[in-house]
Image (cartoon, rainbow, N blue to C red; front, side):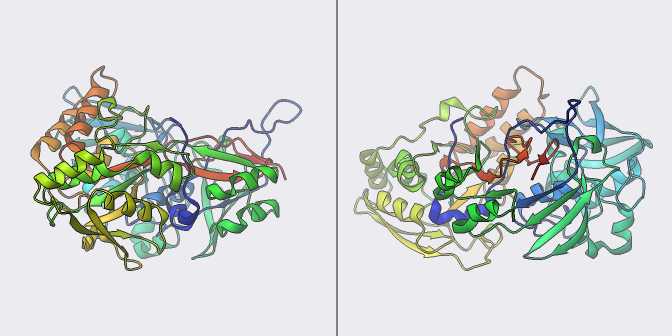
Length: 506
């Protein structure tokens, strides 16, 4: 995948969706062992809550993974690998999966993390009235404890996506004792079994944590103290790292050259994030698919990348980046930039003289929205720009039918498709979808991940969704961060950022 970079004027908003990683080798001692100790300060946004069950922001997963461990985790390519569970096995029909836990696991409150705790945590995630992961766990009809270290998930259909699904917030295990004692306290006082334990949390300011010596992979955690701070203003991010306020911090592309000139390391990481126009196809004129197709043909995606994103982008027509297993090559340039074809489609839809629409964005003077406005107006789509009400959750209210947005993917590609296109998907503003989409998703879900036909089954589901639904994908864009050269060992993760092997020498 080619790297992409976020737009300077959008940096403040986009920081919520960015991440960090890198790739140097950690310092070694004279005997060749990795050094340890010291502290790491990360410029990143604080979570909406410290409770993974009620988290409302997808990007919370990066912070929550500091305090919580999940049954599985993602490797750098997004594959599910062992974490709290050292292994898992499906039955012959694919509707039961048994996870074998590591021996001697404990939560930071000292209580055991055993099969009963896993059952309690997962069922809370499925059933709690305020859970935001309930829909993801709806496939689980029951959880059976087979032994203190073996727990089996009973499913209502074959679903080989479960190990992927459980590598994120959905699979983070929360202490049942903490839930019983004061569930509301989890919003500010996490009790998990992650690599770090929280010491202090000041909303809108910072959080300090210390290494959890009982973490199952504690030997890979090489810093003793971890501080999470709200990212600096983009215009002073470089100075903040130089002064030692941050070891690693998110920066906008306008600061890349300044960061390099200051001797900092800059990392541009390929991730799942893609810019997209959310479209409610139950609202005129978007209820006519010819209009949404005309919009897609009218957009010069390469110009969006070149002008609005400094030439650092990948034009895209689907929700996954190039080279990821779900990326469907046949959808590349699905709707080529063709202004004449856009006008023809508008005329066929009854808008030969043009049509007026309102495009909603999150900020004043949004350069991406302004460029889209110009491109659409060139084919007869008169665009009025409006700024969404601050704090409004359009996924819930569906107040705005045509919105500049971003999608940051999910641990499971099929989960991502359901968020975008499922009948209850948050980004499916029309809350409607032809049945062939779910049918294609179910075929892919019932295909083992190591089956030779798995990739094609996922790509078929992507094609079924992208060619029938109105969401208009524009281009992929990355995480960008700068770090002091003394911060080493950072890896590039396509999914959740992790800090195993990271050291800071200053």
